[in-house]
Length: 73
Image (cartoon, rainbow, N blue to C red; front, side, top):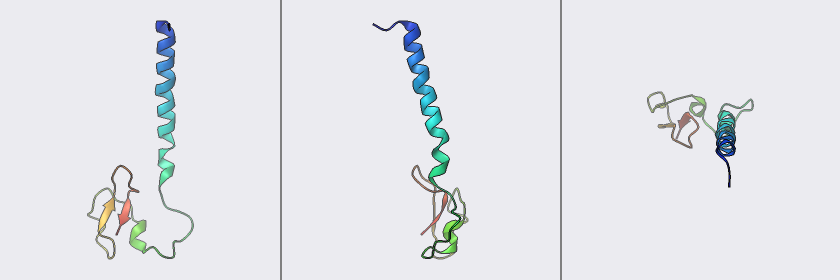
């Protein structure tokens, strides 16, 4: 049987572990130092909504849960 202090310590480790994992989330997307030969230039534009993504062939902003935060086509 776990005592109250042990339970609180366990909860703190879980919470801090999740916070640490979240800090590495920003590495999942972003611009690269190397050009992408097959991607049009509009895919390198940052966005939060579809407004800035109107130059062809881009039509929408990939800003969902698993999106990149950049224009997409």
